[in-house]
Amino acid sequence: MIEWLGQVLGIGWKITPAGGLTGDAFVAEKDNRRLFLKRNSSPFLAVLSAEGIVPKLIWTKRMENGDVITAQEWLEGRSLKAHEMQHQRVADILHKIHHSSELLHMLLRMGRKPATSDDSLKNIKEMLNSRGLIANYVEVQTAIDHLEQLLPNTRNQNLVVCHCDINHNNLILTEDGNIFLVDWDNAMIADPVTDFGMLLKWYIPIENWNDWLIKYGVTPNSNLFERMYWYLLHDALQFLNWHSKREEPVKVMERLNDLKELNEQIRTSILK
Image (cartoon, rainbow, N blue to C red; front, side, top):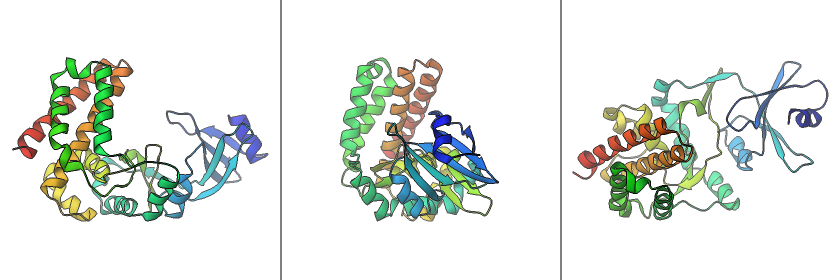
């Protein structure tokens, strides 16, 4: 792969892997200039760049084997720290993404269909059943019961572009103070609580949830929290299934503990 990239860039570029699970990302350096290269990035990247949500897209090139290589401006910076996820600028960038008609229209043109909660519940039940996880674990059965009970409250929502992997490592603070949200491989059209529910659960103390939601631009209410917990449960079940398929028993137990905690919060705070 590095040899192919060298042919695309020309003489004098030093190319090194940028890390990551897929091995499709690289850093190219020449004459004090650096580029971030990635193989087969989504066409969505161009719109994200135009919206100022990711670093500037410099060029896109198709290789002889059909792969598409994108080059983005390299910006010096760092990932956000966990406590910085409470910052107003994080709420602002999520609000911008969720209210962007350009991002939504691009995903629709790419053939992405909105992810409805009914379809999501059907799919997760099929996955869990195929591995016997519903029958074998009471917490999984309880979670499915909660999903079914809360399902009507998740319907008929305004579905928007969601990043679907909100964690502090994907938010980059540059040296000049700008924030970018990277790694859009899991983006989908869904209820925006998919994004900020994840952020609240992992980064914001529960007593500060209302304040953060107001920063983001919504009024906290019972329906909002019902939907948020619905998607948190769904995500926890997806992770459980993923770790089960990979035969990672320690991670499976961690996810079961997550489910137990979520089930208890729903029982005491949502369905009280």
